[in-house]
Image (tube, rainbow, N blue to C red; front, top):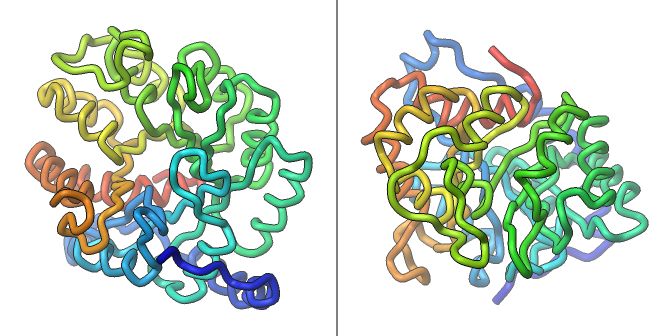
Length: 320
C-alpha cells in the first residue's frame, strides 16, 4: 500500500522539529583529506523517491541500508505526471522519522499561481532544494524561470528532469539551459534524465527517434562545454538514462569524469525495495552504478567526490 500522507495538523506539528533537524543538516561538512583516509567513503544518493512501486518509508530505509547509502536527497513528485505521486509533506514526515538519513527536497506544481508561497513555506519547514522538477512545460516557460530564480534567491539546488519530445518535460535543454546558467549564478542546477544524458555526445539523435542513444560517444558534446563553463551545474548519474549514457563508451566516460570531478553526483532513482532488485526484475540501480564507478574510477578522492562531497557542494553552494 502507498505510504499514507500525514494529516495537515500532524504535518504542521512537525515544523518546529523539522527546522531544528534542518539546522543539524547544515552543520554537515565535506570531509578533509585526512578524514577521508581514516574513514570509509560515505555514500549520498542524490536521487531517491518514496512510493516507487508503492514502496513505504520503511522500505526506502531498507533499500538505503542494503546498498550502503548513508543519506539521500529524497525528491517528491507532487503532480504524479512521471508515474510516481509523492507529496512534499510525506517527504518531510519521513525526514522527521529519519533525520539522520533523509535530506528533504520539495516540489509543487509550478503552473499554480501560489507556487512561490508554497515553496517559501517548504523552505521554512526545512526543505533543502527543489526536485524533481518535472512538468510538461518547455524549459523557456516563464513559470520554470520563476522557480529557478527562487532557488537562486534562497541558495537552493534544483534537480530538473530534461526530456525532449512529445509528452516530455522541460524541453529545449540545448536552446535554453545556458541562459539560466548565465543569469542565475547561485542556484545549483542538477541535470537528470534522457535528454540531459543524450547531450554527453555531440551527436544527439532526435527525441522522436530515440531517447537512449547507443554506441561510441562523439566528443564535443554540450554537457562537456556547459560543465566546464558553469561550476553551478551538476550531473545526476541516476536511473537507466544515466547508466546507459555512462556505460555506452567507458573510455570516454573515464575522461568525462576526469574533466568534471567536482560536478558528478552519484544517484540511483531506484524503485526496488530491498537493494537486491525485489519488485524490479532483480535490478538495483544503486548497486549497478556503484559497481560500475568503483571499477572505472580508481582514484579514491574522485570516488569520495562522486559518492558524497559533490552532493554536499550542490546542497550547500560551497566549494573546496
